[in-house]
Image (cartoon, rainbow, N blue to C red; front, side):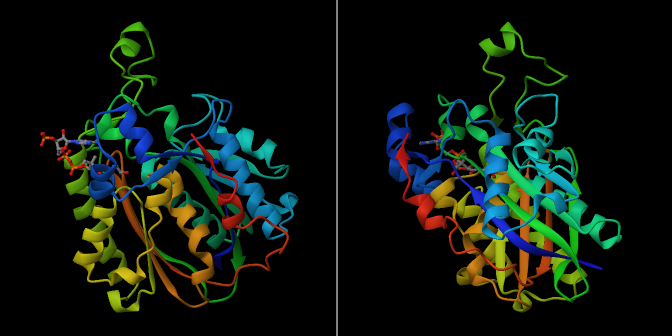
Amino acid sequence: MNAVITAVGGYVPPSILDNKKISEKVETSEEWIEKRSGIQQRRIAGADTAVSDLASSAINNLIESYEVDPNEIEALILATATPDHMLAPAAAMVCEKSNLKNAFGLDVNAACSGFLYALELAGSMIESGRYKKIIVAGADKMSSIVDYEDRSTCILFGDGAGAVLLEASESHFGLMKSKLHTDGSGTSSLLVPAGGSKMPTGMQSLLHRNHYIKQDGSYVFRKAVAAMNSVSREVLTNNGFTTGDIDWVIPHQANLRIIEAVGLDLGIDKSKIKVNIQKYGNTTSATIPLCLWDFKDDFTAGQNLLITTFGAGFSWGAACIKWGVLRNRKSSCKTIQEQENELLMY
Ligand code: UT7
């Protein structure tokens, strides 16, 4: 049994935080941000919007666009690093908000690699024959953990969510072999120190701004390029592919220079590499599904996609997908363009 992506949904909040606004908050410039990261703007969710709202908006977009019956969904795997609460799981709120009455739900936190890990879990569940329809979502409200006084991180991150429906199929399309890694070597280079069991939030942690994300950017950058390159090669070999067999690359969107360096190292032409970082920044668990949502109309059945990602932990991985056929799309649903027309300035 193969696990095929048959529907894709996405949601980004309407408010835009552009480079001009960031350069009014911290010592940087619009040019520096775009040149060093490729980012022009990011979407920021309002104070009353939690990750479960972002995720359920993306799932509801999927359900409505492809006329999916929510009662048929057996499981929801939600990748997120910014759940609504430490406890209960955000997936529980999403099951309620998206009316997934017959699904069990769980959160997966593997930072920027979370969506790929969740896809691997869901794919294995379907390939085992025990499940037929699973929604895999990636959602993050990075603005809830970003320090808007730290110019080395606040330029990078944004909020958003994406989702895919995985269905059992006897066709030859679907998820192929993947390779995932986690080694713990990068814990101190990229983390939110406080708010967990090691350093519960308290006056001291708040005073030292330890409830915000901290990173050693240039170290993480170098590690990301090397890891995404090597794991991509590993997964191509495991699937019996060369780079020439790949029609599209869907890289984690952390920095345009990382994406370009990986493309160059792999020898894959820029025109095959999907990039939307300029619009959304790094949305952590949501970058891969947001790319699938943004670019789904470019993919045709039988094409080979290479997904590659890297994030905190360190955690990294790559997977190949033989793209299948999406369900018929309802014409009355909001397109990306219509969503973009509803923009507000943050
Ligand atoms: O999702 C996975 C995890 N995250 C990533 O993959 C992010 C990886 N890292 C990056 O994207 C990049 O490292 C950054 C965009 C964060 C920084 O770019 P960089 O080219 O690596 O800069 P750098 O950290 O090496 O810093 C170079 C200089 C420093 O000044 P000095 O020491 O040379 O005087 C920084 O203080 O740039 C300075 N700098 C800035 N200048 C203007 C750092 N941030 C800024 C800024 N505006 N926003």
